[in-house]
Amino acid sequence: NADFKLETLLKADLVSARDEIEEITDGADKQLKIEHQLGEIKYQWKTKEFLFAEWKDRGIYVLKSTPVIVEELEEVQMNLQTVLTMRHVKPFRKIAQELLTSLSETSDTIESWVKVQTMWCALESVFTGGDIAKQLPK
Image (cartoon, rainbow, N blue to C red; front, side):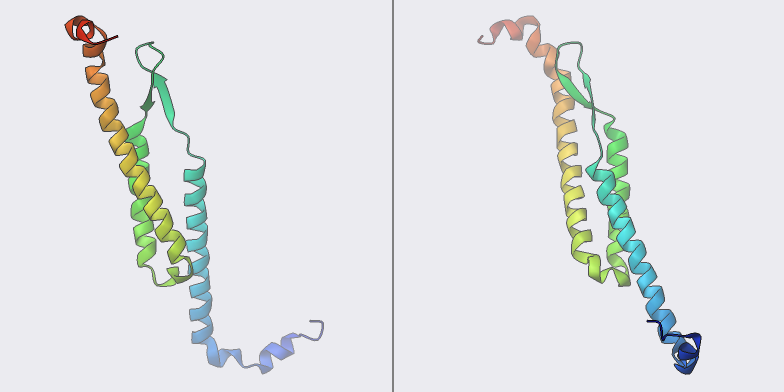
């Protein structure tokens, strides 16, 4: 507004409402930080690429670097749990909770995948060579 001047602010006596104004602006600043943090987490996991490597040159690929992925997932889940305890998360609570649920399910899936993959890697030679392989139907 072209009519808005410093004089208008001075007449508004904003100093008398200083504590309330500081509380509101601090809350807005904290909400902005939460919003940015959630955006960064979404972007990080939306663009995350998993690495695969060929198993014993047999044309079968297995998931690699899982300890790093699991550690990153655990860290971001702890961060989200902390965010959910913050007073200023209210406008973002649903988004944060959905993100935490999604990442928790991802973590559980990777854990199951790694267990199956580890067992398969240990048993693969049993079923591809030796007496057991010869006894299996073709």
